[in-house]
Image (cartoon, rainbow, N blue to C red; front, side, top):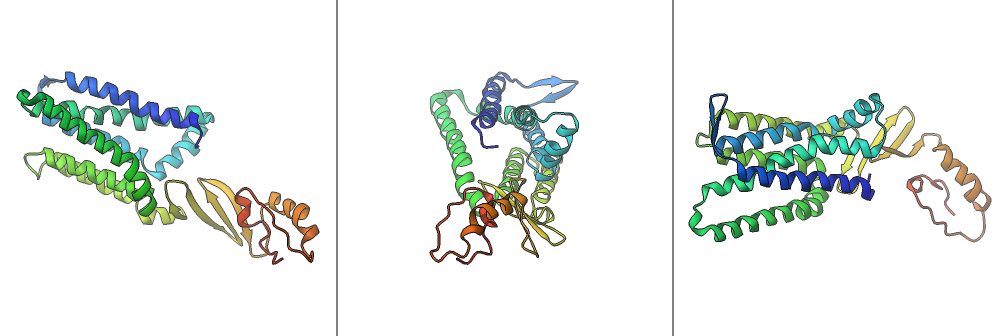
Length: 274
């Protein structure tokens, strides 16, 4: 939904774990866990790969449809506030928490002699990244290549960071990250979108055209918006509106201007030439 209540949940699921990630990332020190030495490089790599694993289903249309339309409904959870909260907790807050540790962890690689200069530079690139993620991704990428390909680009970028972190470019973390990226590219590919009957998917809405026998249905953001079949039939509420508002003046000598608000505008008065 586009209500401020659901949007506020998403914003909270980003800002709060980001702040906690900053704090815990700054407190991390290389140590041994179960006999394995965890260096800064290993910690960064682990955070990136784990975030990718969680984002993989969380940013996949196939999984999201199953999560919202099947899993939660079967569990009796129908409130959109609760649904959004559960999704944001598992698939937004957790990866943001681990990715939020990146900046304080990377700061350990710089000398303390120019602390103020390094801090200013890191904050500059961090804020620049937030700006590009919020503005460039939405206004440019989603509008031109679609939401699904923008998601794919996110996985590619995560893989690039993992590769840059590794001393050995042919290592297990690199192969694992690239494998996850390939899966992400497939789940958000044009082939999968076509199987879902999606004709476009931008920052405003996802449009699907379903063919059911002689009927053609238009779905906007998974809502059944309008229908037209080979015999001119439409959704009952549209036909009712036509009987009440259009039929009495269909053959009038003076054409009328009629304002239509709603998705029914795609079919309402379709046959009227006056």
